Image 1: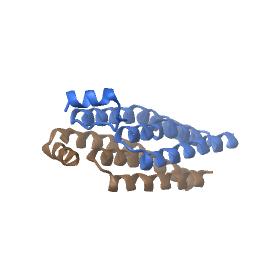
Image 2: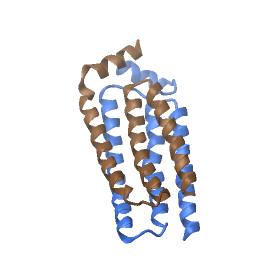
Image 3: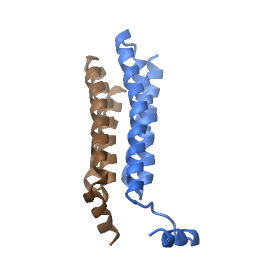
Image 4: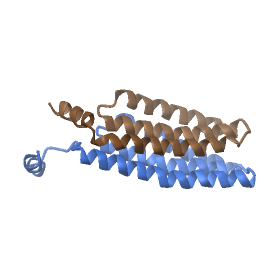
Length: 92
Length: 109
């Protein structure tokens, strides 16, 4: 069952990276990358149990923090002109 | 104990895959955000509870609880920041064309 859950998480990560590549707006890309990071935390935890080495959970904790900081750091630039310019181009 | 762990992992995997289908198939940014919210909170909680039921040591359970609590605090915060940034930059949701929508879109260009 652990291996089945790992494969399911891998499939969902492929779906998320597909949306991150073809997303129409910047926000879709940020959302997909955030989902990818959350699923990476789950994948690291599951792989620790599959390989019988639960020390991987430390890496999962650190990855969750890095994911949050990266999303908030990118959103700090949402007032920048490139975000608004791309939205106006989409409307035209 | 093993059967309950497998059940939790199965429910978590199903919710993850449904969220992945949602992020590919939904038409709009805000609806995609709804699909991601399902996988970020409920599916993560289900899979981590399923891992807790695998009978690990005490410290491993503590680390799993820490990951679960951090995920439950962090991902709604990130989703809220992302949605407020999108609304702030005038990203409009796709709406059905009715009389009220036409009025709203004409008054708020």
